[in-house]
Length: 212
Ligand code: PRP
Ligand code: MG
Image 1: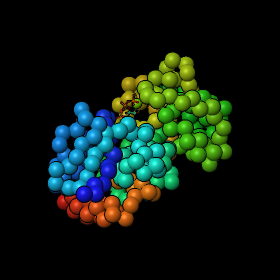
Image 2: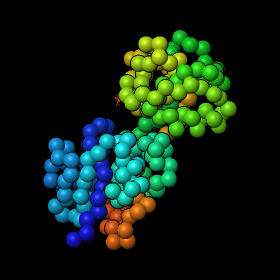
Image 3: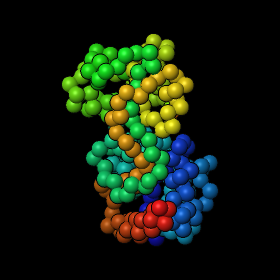
């Protein structure tokens, strides 16, 4: 029997809520997490647990048919990939931040400055649209530490509660984009699997309506 392949974040902030929405759709998945692949018991679905940043490429290649991931990751690495549903959880924003003590009037103040980020494409596009040239330093995690260790003048990263910024003595100065979890679709999905996707989307819509 044909099964749809869905990618879900392996560990991290989206993992739990992603599995929860599938569960609320009445789909029961045998365990997960420890295994990298699981099969649903009562729906034609296979679940692959993957690293966030790898998911856009898997969608592009058609290795997975659909995925639950943060819109921010798609903006950064998968602008060519279609969003089928916004899922109304894992809300966050991608922001520029600078040390609290620094005077900041506008984005022009970042001209010639060093910015640490895991979102180089997103920052580049934003700064370009403002006519600002900055020097980007790409780091994969703990970005907020960069100004304190003299590695950068500012950072661009996701902000949720704001506590990481606060703990590192940084202030949010620009919001580049707002993000939430989305259901994304591979451009290579087959007609047969599209039928399964239709059923899933119908269930997701009902779940989201019920949550309001
Ligand atoms: C994420 C993100 C921010 C923080 C935002 O980091 O990179 O640093 O969460 O959340 P907050 O506004 O609620 O503090 P995470 O803790 O996932 O670790 P990482 O940066 O090392 O991946
Ligand atoms: Mg972080």
